[in-house]
Image (tube, rainbow, N blue to C red; front, side):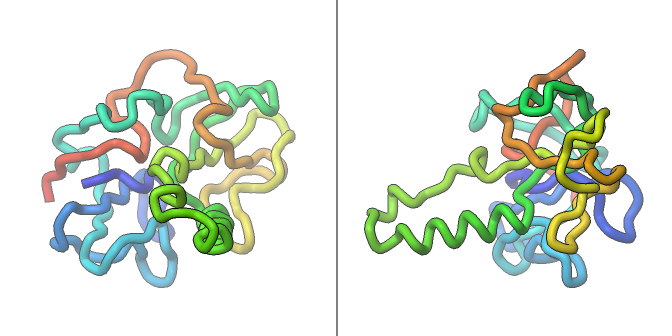
Length: 179
């Protein structure tokens, strides 16, 4: 399957990975309760802990930063360090993408409106300094928690990795899970 979300889930402890399975043998559609963490077809979504991921394959996206939730990164836009708290496609960005695609669909070919997974991925960062726009929540949806103005969402090109390379990587990774 394809890792589509990495982060905290309301009511559950620890970091979870939202997997879009290749076949309909999952438990959900990327949502738990009324909250969507990612979107996929019915029974094609599954949430797991990192210990349940047996193997990863990052060949499909060699240019994505090799970071996971909890890693410290340098955020170029704000010229300060921060901690990755969320990786995925937040609802407020997905809604903008959907409006943009539908407004241009009539004027373009289907191939031109295809969005690659890496272009959908945003990193929720808790900044060291109050240079952000939020507290990890946007439009009433909490993606992570931090102090007001310490939260921001950026794309991969806006962060630089610091320190060692983690073994578990970003949401554009494919994974083999132990269900």
